[in-house]
Length: 112
Ligand SMILES: [Zn+2]
Image (cartoon, rainbow, N blue to C red; front, side, top):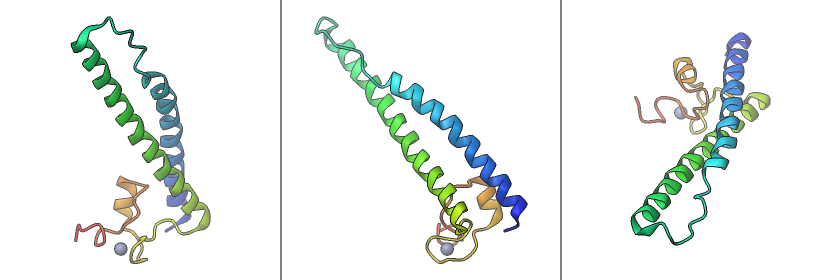
């Protein structure tokens, strides 16, 4: 991959990561269910738990995405970025542009 393209993708990954870090910080505040004191009744209690579950799931997705982005930056540092984790072939540039953290070439991802 040419260096300019790699730098462009790295900047994009870093931007996405910075934005994600903010969302994670906000998610940490949103995740606690608020103390239930037993006076809210069964329905609102279920409602509150459900919202907590949704917030928790969203947060877990963000944390997993953050790991993927960090791993991407590590591969960029190591010089292994852009090669399929399964077969070792270069990953198609259009795949990397659409999704810079992708690990697999189109064939290994089952798209060919
Ligand atoms: Zn592959």
